[in-house]
Image (tube, rainbow, N blue to C red; front, side):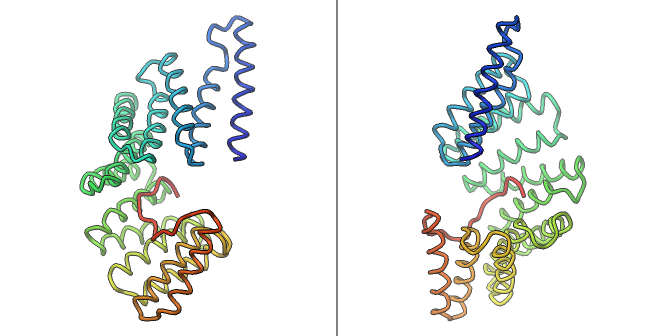
Length: 293
């Protein structure tokens, strides 16, 4: 909400400055690029707040401005198309999301070529759509292409590489649990090397690794991994955070498998209370591609 307020205030200022600059002889206004960027930013904030209708409005407005001033093949146009695609994916309009992300990718391929982090970002967005549609083969193929690009351009120990390894690991959970574990483990090593052990992304990754162990019926190891994730999450996010609730629920699932029904119900109740307080419906372990770490 604070970010929305700040961005809206900034837009108002840029619009005023742009009007003044027009009066001084600038045809389109000196600050029109700032107006377009801030309009696009407001769309991103609204999407993160769950207001898809407002997000679409601001992104579409930014897209019209950028296409009119820059033409249809500019990188800023590609960025806004990717943002629009994210909103449509959030709305589960995957066909429209795929169309927009593909258009953004085409622009980036023509402008900066295949070995660029922006091109990799568009490929990741497309792969995320395929994952959502449960087309795991296409998703995995694209994630591997992204990983190759990132390793070549960013090196092997970059956070973007870690995020893509997690995306690959998440897809592999549906077909090859051993390989999935290996990718999560490699990603974890990168994250710990950058942030240290006591970080939210470490807790998230451990939670995902616990899910792999759970799927392999390695319940003792899964419990240990979930507990480690819980300790980090509690220390960083506090006991009332939804991510903590997700880990508590996962621990409850392990206890249930171990025949400890009363302890399991206690963990489920703790998780449900946190989610209820946060206004979130009961949920299973979150499983899906990561945009960033």
